[in-house]
Length: 191
Image (cartoon, rainbow, N blue to C red; front, side):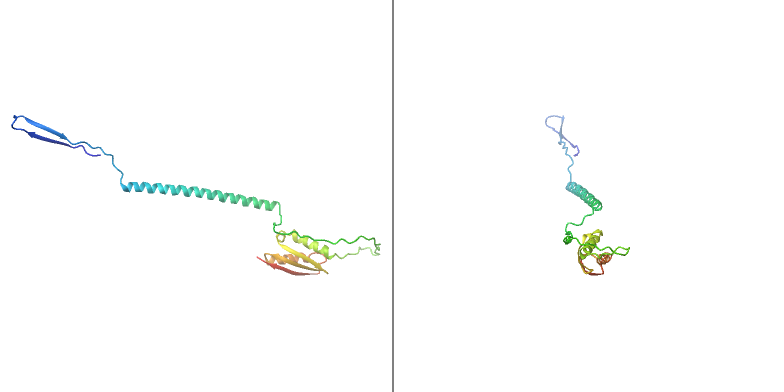
């Protein structure tokens, strides 16, 4: 605020008499509000911008956290669904094995004279079915595409697997099937 100032001027006029004339003059009192300096205004503007940036960052962080939470929930649901119903991937083609049906004819069966039953050798088609079934029952090999062909007791495996261990496991599984004398493993390891 401005100060109050008063000026007093005394004038004596001699010709009119001996009486002194006092003339008083007052300066006007100016009341001004203190103005803000340019630096104070700049500081307020910078503080407002900083507050806006902080609020924006908090909102974005909250949205990102919400997105990450949704992704985690979706992954958990997918993992739970995969554990409940194990299904082969969509890209895997089903293994279709056709077994030729023999024509029906009545043939007299000779009765063996021994007390032990005679063993019948499995057909190539039944061996292929057994190997394919065992490969599909393996949880890790189920996702791979493996073709099986059996000719004269020799099983030929072909297809793709992601690791060398799975290639060896497929060969070991094929060797356990009754009627397989040897295995040709032409499976390609592809990571």
